[in-house]
Structures are given as structure tokens and as C-alpha cells.
Amino acid sequence: MPSSPLHPLHPSRPSPAPASAQQGHADVFGGEPLTPALSVGFVLLSRFTLLPFAAFVDCLRLASDEGDRSRQLRCRWRFLSEDGAEVASSCGAVISPCEPIGGRHGQPFCDPRQFDYLVVIGGVLGEGEEADRLERYSPERTGPERRALERNRPERDGGTLDYLRHAAALGVPLVGVCTGVYSLIQAGVMEGRRCCVSWYHHLDLTRRFPAVSAVADRLYVDDGDRLTCAGGAAAADLAAYLVERHLGRAWARKSLHIMLLDGHRSGDHSQPQPVVFDRIEDRIVRRAVAILEQHLGEPLSVDELATRAGASRRGLERKFRQAFGVGPQKFARDLRLRYGLWLLYFTDHSVTEIGERCGFADTAHFSRHFRSAFGQSPSRLRRDPVGREEAGVDPFFLHVGARLGHR
Image 1 (cartoon, one colour):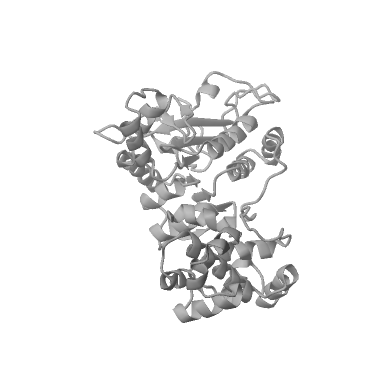
Image 2 (tube, rainbow, N blue to C red):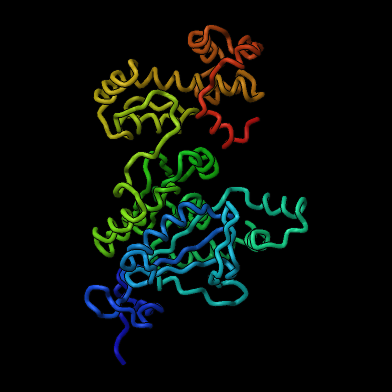
């Protein structure tokens, strides 16, 4: 009996022949049947975000075949859920059918070694509340979205975490996309690893998992057999990165061109940030500002900021003065004061609590700088309804408030 083809990342174990190869699809150039060079299993979580999933799988699809004929020739992909049930995305679109990952009630796991990567597509945080809302307010709903939500409540995700641990123990590379990184962390497979998360979820993740080293100043992070991605359109960049690794640069470019994406962005490309200041052209300054936004309550030294932004202290100070007319230290303090103004107007926290949240040593320190910046004390400005209407508070902090649940 002839030996099985070897798995491309794990030479010691065979890679199962995919359906496309079994059916004898021919290479469009050589006429010989193709064995996919890249195989991906998508683990879809309840209310997964549709854009990063679609961007990732479409990049594979377009690299797999000539044109956009969608045959799984060079790439192969399958959709997995905990029990094989359909899974609803956050916008209501449903993926069906899915294959069960197994592992519960004595069932064998779907062998993760058949995949080069398991890609976990994360969902909207708090999806259990959404299922409860459907139960309370829409008992008549019996469509796919309701069924998928009911079958994928958070308390039923234990099998998924078991599966990720099982895959990690076998050495299968794991990819967390969008909030999929939360599942990798909860599965206990990110210890000692860096991970990438969207700026929008960074504060929530670091508060829930303070021991995790999370960054939100780049599109994706490749940490060996753990890859994490901020989500959104960046999923296409990560997929293209893997396509280039396994199939070659031409196939990655082909996918991105057909998707009308202007080239492949590297992992260390800065995430677009909702900064309200005038457009920042310098990449180092953009990254430094993004880092400051992630540490509003814990001031960084200029030396640490420069190191994380990839610049010398002198170089960073020069760039900030060119961009804003002030050094990074004053810029950071002003940013924290603007955050304090938002908290003052749009939350009921005390002035003392606001000063602490903005990283000031005490109330007197906060009030002194606040008066210098805005011309009034925090207490007096809070009582001024006209000032509240005319403040023009940075929209960025409205996003911050949404993430923290402020009212």
C-alpha cells in the first residue's frame, strides 16, 4: 500500500486526502491532480463576526483555484462547531452545515491534525445575553438565527475549549481572529505568548486577563504556532500571509487583487485608530499615540513609550514636536485630561475616581492640571450644562465608554 502524503507542517504525520484531491481535480497548469498545500479548519463561535471570517476564507478560496471558480484545489477548508449545528453570525447570517468537533459524551474528537491551522473566529462578547433576550422578547422566533444562538450559548463552549487544548497538545497551530483570542486564552494555550487584539477590545481583554501580553498597535502577531489577528479586514492580510507561506507570493497577490485590496499589509502595520487629532502621517507617532490610548489609566515613561513604538527617546520627542508642537509627555497628559473630561460629563464617577482612572497621583494633582487645561475646576465644569453641550468631547472616548459600559 502506498504511503500517505506527509502533512506540510508536521512531516511525521500523514495528511488526509481532501475531497477535491480524491475527485481528481487537475492543476490548471500541469494537468496533474492537486493535493492542497494549505488546509484550514474554521472553528465558528456563537455570533461570530462575519467580515473577518469572510475575508479569511475568501482569500483561501481565490488562491485555491483559477479565477474565482472556488474549487478546493490548492487550499482546503472546513467549518466546525461544537456539535455540528449551524452557527449564526453577529449580523444574523448563518453558516450551515458545520461539522462537529466531538469530544463530548465519549465522542472522538474531529482529528485536528488534518489541518495546517485551526482558525477560531470570535463572536460578540456577551452573546448569552442575546440568546436570553430572544427567549424573553421573541418566543415566537424559530428561524436559523434563534436555533444557532440557542445551540451555541457560552455555557456550551466547554467542548470547544477542550478541542483547542487537544489540538495544542498535538502541535497544531492555532489562530485567534477578532475575539477568538479570548477562547485561546480561556483554553489555557496562550501562556507566555503575545497576542493581538483590536484597539476596541484591548482594554476589556487586559482587564479580564491581566497576565496576558496583548498588543493593539498592529494587525496581527505571529508567535510561532499561535497566531492572533485584530479582526476586520486584517483577517485578509493574515490569510494572505499564510497563503504566501504555503503556496507562494503570486497566489497571495492574486487573492488580494481580486478582492480589490491594495496589496498585502504586514503584521506590524498599525491598526487604524479613531484619533481625533489632525491626520498623523508619521508611522512611529501613530503607533505611539495608539499605545498611549491603550494606557490612559497607567502612564508610561517616555523611554518605555519610545521602546514600544520602535524609536529612540530623542527621535520620538522630535517627531512629536513636529507633529503636535509638544513632547510625548505633555501630549499623553493632555490625552488623559481629555479622557477625564469625558468621564466628568458622561459618567457619575466622583472627581477622585476620575483622577485615578486617568492615572493622576491624587485628586489635587488631577484638579490642578484640569483647571490649567480647561480653565475651571472639575466640580464647577460638571455643573455647567452649557459647557457640556459645547464641549466637543473626542468621539474616541465615546468608544471607550461603550466598551466599559459607562452611562
